[in-house]
Image (cartoon, rainbow, N blue to C red; front, side):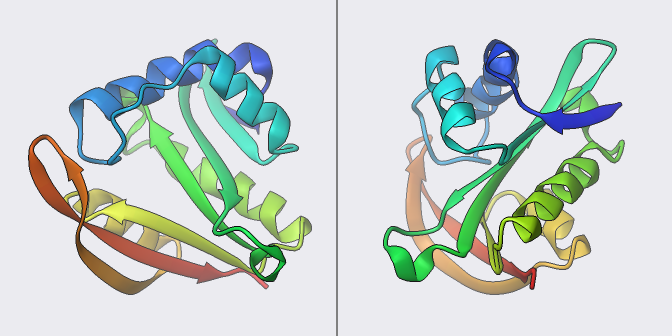
Length: 160
């Protein structure tokens, strides 16, 4: 397995990993499917802050970070997203992606990295705890998907 910066040519594979999670799980609250064009634009706009893991030509997962909130006061605080294909879970792929993401974030002057995790995604919470993220808050019933309200768990890791 290798972890590398994403390229525009990865966009369709990223959609193949991300869209089934959007359609069939509560790991994300969005219902808007990703498009190859949109992902390619995100890869370009994020200046290297978008990573993929692949093995034998198969995309296993992605990790990226983006502004936490608008405005200059938040410039060194970022939120991240990590998504894995089902066959990549439990193999160290997520840890490898987050390692690359954190190295990039630190070298780019990011001080604080945030995770917004569905309250139904207990594996995601445990994963982030193992990476040194601290549970900061649980926001009750802020997400709505599958005809039900869901909590959002906020976790933070100070990088610098």
